[in-house]
Image 1 (tube, rainbow, N blue to C red):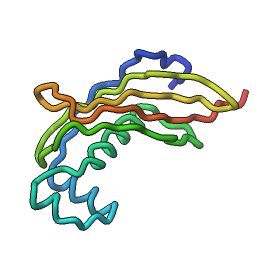
Image 2 (cartoon, rainbow, N blue to C red):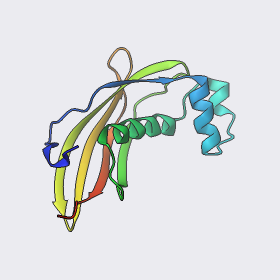
Image 3 (cartoon, rainbow, N blue to C red):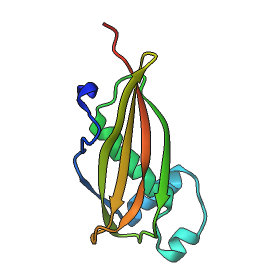
Length: 132
């Protein structure tokens, strides 16, 4: 992937993400969150949605060795029920180089079937510039 070509406004491929019981349980086990609230309320933990969004973004970027996820700002706009399928969209907000690194800021959006925003935010990924 030629990261220099990712201009602000570039849209990543929209992707449908399913939040079934198995996916949610796998996430809960991975982060060792034994709170019963998720099973009692049939709700997807907010950070599960964030993790799925980041996973999708990183899978579409074809990461280079040394890539760093530098940060993110997220807003969660309502509960997501287990079994729900949402749509991930990502748009390049900024692409700049400095000090041997490329800084790529991507606006993230996850919407439900009625196009209601369930998650919105921005993620920053840093790539080492290739040696020439």
